[in-house]
Length: 365
Image (cartoon, rainbow, N blue to C red):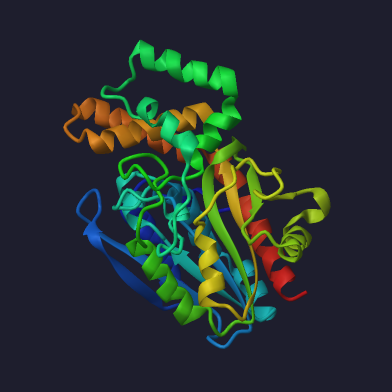
């Protein structure tokens, strides 16, 4: 496919520029929700929303990027390519499906090469009813002293203790303890927050404006980090609902060629999670039949990804770190969530495009 590499960008500002240009070239209007902070280079940050299709469409497909900031380098490329893809746009239009592109759910993390929002919150752990008691992650509490030591790189004692934890309990337990989310340590990893973030509140407004008219809604949220490099795991992003999982598997399973996994039955590379972003659809569009997936593209092995996250969180706490170390950590973070090779990008677009065509067929089946 031509134009694959050019759809991706090396900075948030470049990615936003390409997205806005692609929307304009397609004759589509942009609804920009400006972020209260500025970017890493002082640039304007925004959650930009583009709708391709009539406002009264009964079927709506949402394609979103940068829920986890730095993962937007992949997701934005998918969205830009899709907006430029005449065949894809014609297919959705012919089958009566409106497509909602939500670019940079977390623009702050995208620009600053962070996974979290400006509140240091993991957006995909932030969708809770905060008037209720929040989940407690006791396994994370045990690990917290090891994860963010006083110095970086960690000293030998920290390495030995970390290796002992993984050796005695396994890598899966280590990953699950950290990634499940926690609400106890505001400077820690995978912090779910104690109130709705700006991104949470803004996304809800977007859904209220653009999704409430639809009777059937599909959602593909692009992520990176877990699994074999370049392989897109289709993770069911619905409630623990057998009917919704069955629809997701029928739509995106490819007859077994592209299996849809679930955090509820243990088939996913992801741990069991709470406070997930897509649960907002049930609140804001209660009358719609909803079916969704997170498209999770692999990058590095889990331990290397965790090390990058630990380093970047350490840097956020120690902002007076030497410039060379800070630059090294930011590059390590980029490498953990975005593989800057033509081969990887080709894999990303090929699988994303397939999932988009599958979604339209599913919505109109």
